[in-house]
Amino acid sequence: MPKRTKIDIIGDMLSSIIDKGGKIKPTHLMYKSNMAHKQMGTYLDELVEKELVQKIKVSNFDYIILTDKGTEFLNKLKQMRDFEKAFGL
Amino acid sequence: MIRLIYSPLWFYGKDIVIDVISVIVLFLISFFSFRCYKMQKSKNHIYLSLSFFSIALSFLFKILMNFTIYYNVMETSKIGAVTFSYQTMRATDAFFFFGFLLYRILTLFGLYMLYSLYHKQSMPNFILVSFLMLMLTYYSQAAYYIFYLTCLVLLSLITASLMSNYKKNKFKMTKMLAWSFGIIGFSQIFFILVYIKVYYYVAGEIIQLVGYLLLLASFAMVLRDAKKD
Image 1 (cartoon, each protein chain N blue to C red):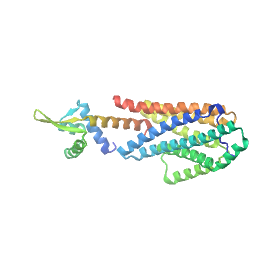
Image 2 (cartoon, rainbow over the protein chains, first blue to last red):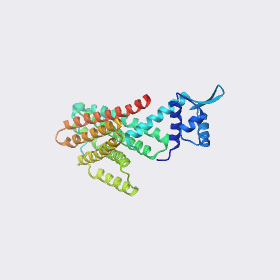
Image 3 (cartoon, rainbow over the protein chains, first blue to last red):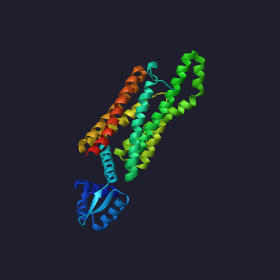
Image 4 (cartoon, rainbow over the protein chains, first blue to last red):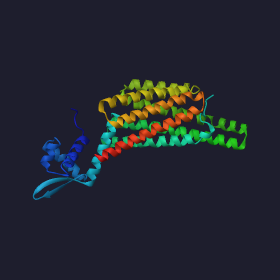
């Protein structure tokens, strides 16, 4: 299997959140997007900084939610993937 | 003597509209591919963007040339002076020569880049083919059909590559893209036959328009369907 690029990893993370209804626990996100703890932390910080996701607390549990900007970014990513697929890039 | 006008008089301007539509479609795809490149930094995206940009630019040169020629011809028919027309054309000979040369070389270069995406070329090979295309364009000014024949070959190869991709991925948009390139390729046959009757030019332009509209539809479907998922 080819090595995932940065954009692939971000796409997998955002898709995992969508699959869980837009809200996911950090550990679940780590497993679902096949990442190591440290690696996920770095990526998560970047996603939060870019306002693609948001960290929230619900009944003492940490959750990560997808923002509107994140949803929009994921749409663009899907368009790009379909475009690549159509042209066979 | 270079033949500059292929269109029947009543079709003047209409072909420009068709070419403008083609330019818009080509620029849209080039721009989107460039945006993908900015996101992913993949070489394939920038090559795809450059190839569409090159073809779009070539059409712009064609439009500019045709517009100038048609304007000259219309003005001449209004005045009715043959000498005036002759002098105008002579004065702008160099302009037309380079304009049409650029139109042809940019089209061939764009198509060759697109072809190279599916059949990876080594740098020496790329330089050699580019040089041959430049020579072909320059020395085939009088035999205009050689240009269209080369386009036909390149477009057929691109269509075959897309069809082969479709057999593997079964993605509807790939099939639509293959069809659109196939139709654009098919239109080149009519451009080759222009020397028999100018009406083939009209047929070629209309078929080419269908091809570009299908290309636009494929592109729009890619964007729309991705949003629906």
